[in-house]
Amino acid sequence: MTSRVERCGGCGRQLWLPRQAVAARCHACRSVTSFPSSSQRWAQVYGSVSQPHHNVVTTVPSNYVAAGPGNEEEKNPYRIPTKQNIRTAMRWLAQDCQPGDSLVFHYSGHGSRQKDYNKDELDGFDETICPLDHETEGPIIDDEINATIVRPLPRGAKLHAIIDSCYSGTVLDLPFVCKINGEEYKWEDQRIPTACYKGTSGGIALSFSACSDNQTSASTSAFSGKDVTGVMTSSFIQAVKNEPCLTYGRLLAAMGDAIPSLMPNDTDVIQEPQMSASETFDIFTKQFIL
Image (cartoon, rainbow, N blue to C red):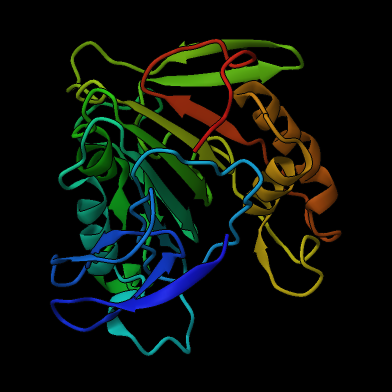
């Protein structure tokens, strides 16, 4: 998908947009600037993500936020994935979300877990993502991610999260996790009766994660030949490029099939991609569309 650079009408910062974008809200000053010709609303902050165009067909307004471990050469302070910048981007992503909107949140970087103090986790741990400054500012825990981009999602809106980090299986705290074995699958209920509500406000939220909550994830250069990316991100792109019109079940299975071949030769990491959702559905009949 080709892109273009525009200037925010409020503060003058650069905005990276697809060529068909008609408007975008600046993540820094929050002003909305209109541009000619598009059926999508798209803004990308904190770095770039290879975007597989074959199945990324959006006929509705779309927001996109990408976050990652950061480029040490990045000069724009608003594009560096600090804790505050990622928090700001997540709030921006969900702000003013309307029925018909399709949101995408991608994170590729370090992940961890910590003790669950509010007793809303079956395994007793909160999953986290680790911003560039996490050693001084702390991680962002799954409770905050859920409250910021999942719970506000209104009926008729959709969120896809692509999380490539360690311990990321339930990092959005979605109520259901899909376990797949060949052509068989089951949804595991993660809800705890005494815990607070972790679903949406009527919309649909789905998350593809690099691994289960007790696994780590690996990086590889096998996909590009030189640039190092997360194995999960590489498997996701490869699956979407190779098989148009994927179902969610086929996408999850294709990622799982691809990961062993993408693993570095010197690693013994066992990594199983996960899918979680705000509601259950037939994963082998529902088509994957961002």
